[in-house]
Image (tube, rainbow, N blue to C red):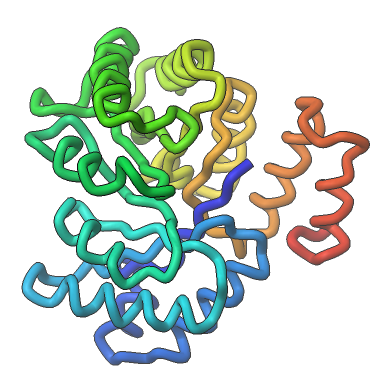
Length: 265
């Protein structure tokens, strides 16, 4: 189970305010709290205008690295911003993200191929977001051909099956879980990731919907989560589900996380 802490993102109002005001202590505390809550990567996404994005990313990365040793996920819709942001990181982290839109995957894979950087890849292309499981898996096939071309092992990849709003879905999350299962069937060592909160947009009591999705997605094979690690209910749900799936021998991870206060009873 891989946790990608999502809190250092300028699209979140409180974080965006801290970025505008250059409140380094706010960012530092977010980094420390997410690390203490068990984050495996700390996502850093500036969400500012293009002309100041890279300098803002550097400012954020420097703060996070001075606060914790947890690897950083460099996050931007601009693949070149991610590439430049990698240079500010003291050790390999997570490249977030690529897709088959335009030349994004080739540009990124050329840079990360001979490194230890891991990479998030979205299952969309120049045709947009595929509407069926088959079409998403076709994009996945093309993506993995690129991995083979650049000699990037599947274990370094975090595939995002594209989690969409539940309230606009005709069949719940059946299509997404079908995609997850097939991806894990084809490549057992690959990771499947996504922003858990996407599922609950425009719904009341979003935390409950997010938790329900996480359980079903884990059962299908999802093992990498972009979420708020400070949400103790969600973290408890993840550890409990992992234990119930037989992936936590003698429940030691569950017990250890409880003792460390990562979740509470």
